[in-house]
Length: 161
Image (cartoon, rainbow, N blue to C red):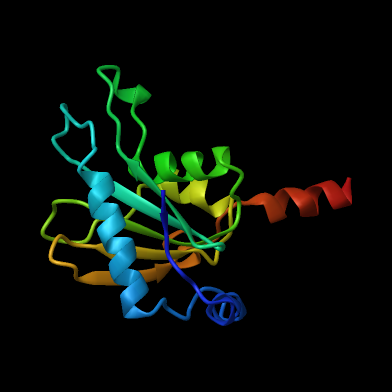
């Protein structure tokens, strides 16, 4: 596991901006490097499409994930979900950002299933899409999954019942 120092004041600014205030370049670079390390572990013999993800918790811990394919295609798991599952299994549930990297010459966004999975932990999650050369596109998860269904929707329903 890796650790990235995220000052409390920056965490507060990100929360207050609903994820719109980007991480400083130095932290983005560390997130990129972590995602590249994760991608190197990919098990993708069928698609030949390795993906790496690095999830940054509010406490600064970084959990890595890679895609793991299966001969029964439905049994595959994406890098983003792998990283989140590892983090949650270690007791983490508050996240600032996720960085994703592939070998494409263009930016690759998380699939719909991963977007829905991530929204469970907050629509204000920062999403950094990296290319191998370090270039980046930034989104807030709510931009990638507008009109999403999440925990707050169930809470609202249960309050009405």
